[in-house]
Image 1: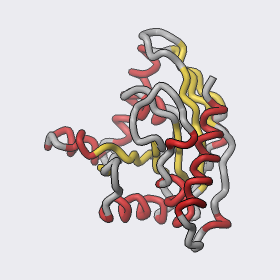
Image 2: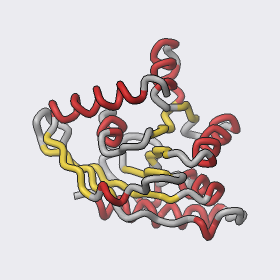
Image 3: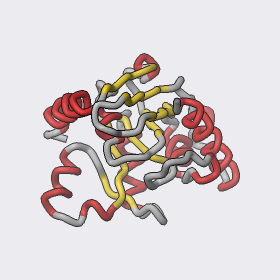
Image 4: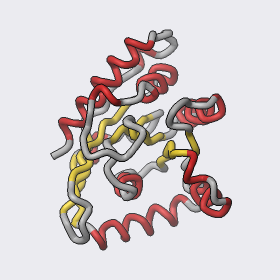
Amino acid sequence: MRLYKAASILFYFYMHTIYDVEYIGRGNMPKDGAVIVCANHKSAADPLLLGGILERPLHFMAKQEIFKNKFFSWVLREIGAFPVNRDSVEMSSFKHALGVLKNGEVMGIFSQATRTEEIDENAGKAGVALFAARSGATVVPVGISGNYKWFSKMTINMGEPIDFKEYEGKKLRTPELEELTKEIMSKVKQLVK
């Protein structure tokens, strides 16, 4: 995380140079405590756009394939990203994610686990609900809208926080986790203009 501050400033100015970025609902981001930012994912620019809205460091789950290059892997880890297998979360990734949240930090998740044009409430991976339930973290849904063309309007719409404290310590079954994930994804979809 040593590079995070410098990288976040650089990415912020870069994103505002190539896009006309509008942030809505910045006040919905909790100032402290464990938070999961759950957003839709259409472009590789999404993590950079999200980083620009947050004053707190953002740890991102990222597909393990982009960590193959040693230098790029080092940079990604230095700015808070960590690898995850999109098909099945390995124990090391699971523990790392829970550690981030148990430390009261902010973790970013694209619940559909891949870039996609459409938001399908039924396609969200149950990980976001599982991590929130295990840690008691607050979930903040975010909708990213725009066509990603240079100098076009991009909107980052941050919704109201969803409290998961009532589920902390409870062992939820897969259907319950899937239903909670569906609710989160529905809110993300509503936030996309």
